Length: 224
Image 1: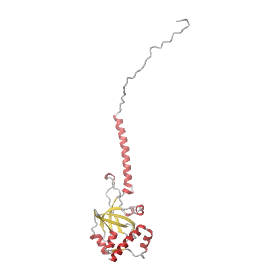
Image 2: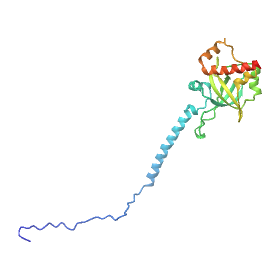
Image 3: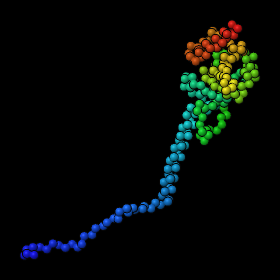
Image 4: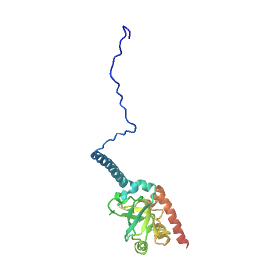
């Protein structure tokens, strides 16, 4: 080595860290942390289910009406068909009906059994005493399923509505009660000079259509 040459600094042997191939580190999870996470997730899911249940119970499609005032005006305007079971027939021919929701909820989401009954009067007809007896005794309507469309509020009765009512006689047969009492001569359509009748004809399309059907049945009875 010549004069003026400087010897390289010696830093010692280089150290290289080699990680063996396939070495997998294992992370330990505390069981308490795991159960806490599951508990949080379960609580979130539970709260979500409770929220869904409350929404469904309060939704009108799943609601069980216990008084005619609870029936939404939108249902009446859209002429939605409702279902129920006749629990009582009053001597006046008025039906007391246990309403069934449009869509039935699973049992865990249902409210307590309904206590209130809807008071339904047959729309568009003046029923005779014989007709009242026919409805209350002869037809044996108690505990029979019916479908009904609310037409309007009953004149002079805040706790009753006039409805177009159909009873299911068996799996293949249904009878419209409004038409049936007219067809048998137990009821008649109110006269045109009746102010309330005339007003309903002019302002309620569903009532007007029902009365047209009833008048046809009345005419057939007269022609027979």
